[in-house]
Amino acid sequence: MKILHIINDSVTNLTRQIIDIQSKDNEIKVIELSKKKISYKAVIDDIFSHDKVISW
Image (cartoon, rainbow, N blue to C red; front, side, top):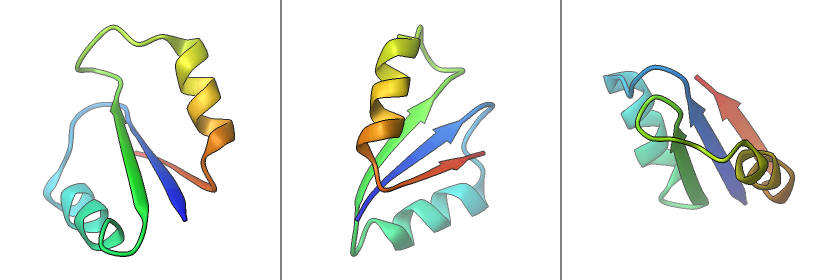
């Protein structure tokens, strides 16, 4: 399963633990909106190309 994590502020310990657990059996992509200038078109493309999207 392809899972996309969109993080609005920063990665917390809980966020990191969940991502680490999910990454064992799934393809994971993490987008941190606060880290860099993000192409919102690319974010929308990622949302539609993943099976599950989690927003933190």
